[in-house]
Image: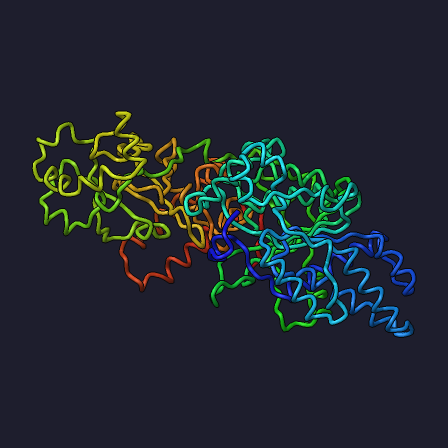
Length: 604
């Protein structure tokens, strides 16, 4: 697929720390014991039960999970001190050769894994590990028919049946698959295009395929399909699948199984690349190939340190578990929270209405070559750009909580105002000096060729009519650590990194602004909205779903919001305490509207 000399951040392969591997293996053995698949009463009972189980890692890498499984087995065998060491060693060797399976795309990595196993356990030094195979777990032999011999060979197709026999299913599948977005990878790796074409065309994947999905979705799907009835699956993967719209088919498929636990590792730095920590928010998903249960346990923001003893980790884990109803989940974003019951109650609360039903919610325009159109006021003066074609323009950093930064330094040339460039000689001269860049790029060339835009137009005049309106609006950045909504009274324009909200009733803007900036909506959005890692992401759909108390309920806060806005308009830091006092009053009133007490729930 992707050449092994490429950077790890391209292939999506990262070393899993041993303390994470050990924790995952420990949890898997706990579930095996709970399901009576493992017996520990005696060596004979343990030996008999575990030899019935087949373990597999479908993306071996350097073999961390295989080492983890063997380490766990060794620690259990040590506990049977009355059993002869030679007998235990013979059993250990038999288990490693016969009960552990794995697949690795790259032969070099597979050879490294085998060498590590031999170095780690001298009694395995003569083993050839017959069940560790080279191939691509998610590409079957049909690739040869779809792609032809030359292209298919680059993907290293793999047949589970041919390599592992007729009985090619497993009792435990555990590991850490590669992570990368298919659509983005196509842009930087030619072999990724071949993989993309295969997944799109194969009868095995065409009903699961999504153009912007991540490669690990396919590893999850393939792995759970290879489980025996009652088998256990456990992967550490990015947690973005929980809400990503392109993971809808994956979520639907997971709900057919019995989810055993979802452990959110937000806040943990798990993976490194070239000595630097990677900003990948992960989770551990564990499920069983059986009918779904009514509820499953979950943990949010579970923090694991490599120095913490195993017993302490288990204690902390059990303290933080909370139940989630699997029946509440569907194809859309999953909400994993101890407040699920309450959040669902808001959806049927007749005193609430959705923001999208009382407001227009829309994204900023797409200039295409933003730095040409959006320019500092000093540059406007320098080039004497005609005022008729200029509009006020705010950027992401201009949007503060409650207000737009006082000294907005930029304006935008709005080409839709230009009927003929000859009527605006200074603007014409400026744009002509940038004509080469404005006419370059495949997307703009395509739009120009089809006659959709002129060479000096924006790429997309998204929601232009709404921005041209003189109505007051609320603006928010598309990404932020906390909710941050600002009142804009200047008819400002913005690019795609800004979202705008115009209430149907203009007089309603103050109460809506107050609600949106409340600590309750910050709490709600972090759970039921959209987020990536620690950042909240403000897009149209989740914004439209925000529950807003009806006007007759929320209008009580309008005077407080107006009072607060008068204070922040002064831009005097000495007034921060006064703002805080009013915000506290607002939060108190708004929490009552939602019947939600942060203090009682220990959230403040």
